[in-house]
Image (cartoon, rainbow, N blue to C red; front, side):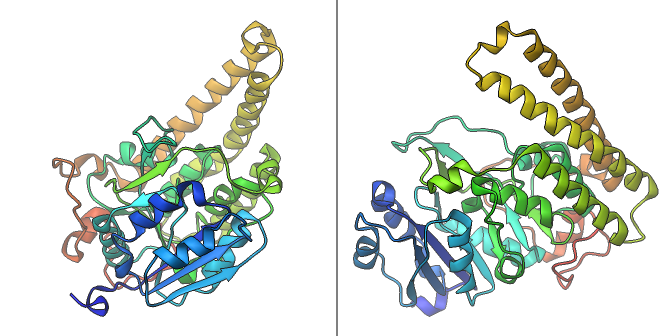
Length: 372
């Protein structure tokens, strides 16, 4: 089949910075599906190890472009994203991979659900590429709570609750497992002042103003390896005070502008959840400081008190999140159809109403405003 017969409305950003350690495998993986993309932009941060030359020699695409940006994780991403002219943007971080079927699934599902960001979860591999255990991310919790077995466009009330409950992680998980609407990223770029926590702050800042969707299918891998971010990005991060400041602003703005159809009890629960989440994040960070201290935390009574307080607050915020999920979907999510996993099922327009549990959703529903 000719190249232009299989292209999708897809652009690919490949951020690089001295990436030769994993680049050969990455380019080999890209070569399995890169013909599906209309546009490929490599944004390099002045690599000195031959990264750019290797890509020029081994990656074939008729619309391959190279741009350059000083080191800076999300600032470099944003620079590459600004070059995109396609409807969708996939961020292909070196070391992480997606299958050809997976790219097709992401694009077709995002298009059918009209999402601003479609989140999926990866399988994890170690530096050698062998399967390994990985952390649980916020969308793991969402899929489990809503008992999802198909792609789903998510209600904003649930996403606000997710952002306030999972204070230590980005809703996006690994961005190399997700698909973004390009205009959304261009309108709302990743913040560059929070170091490697920029994706987490981006998720929190945008939780109430964009359309989120999730697919329970797994078709990507995330390689666990030492950080390759700049020293500034690695040192800079998000503090508990940063979370509190952004969370208060985001929730206040959302409560003022959210649709009239949001039930009063859900609004009340989100108002209750906000101070609990802020206190939980402070207690979580305090306990983590004890764990990372020179003195063994297990011998420190104050560390045990911090742990007890963290666990109590965690239980409260998770219980309140479950209540918001139940109220948002009226318990309908508990009757989702079951099927065997393993196939890449796509939510078609004909059953999108069921999967979104929103009688007002259709294939023509607008992006960018979220929904209650």
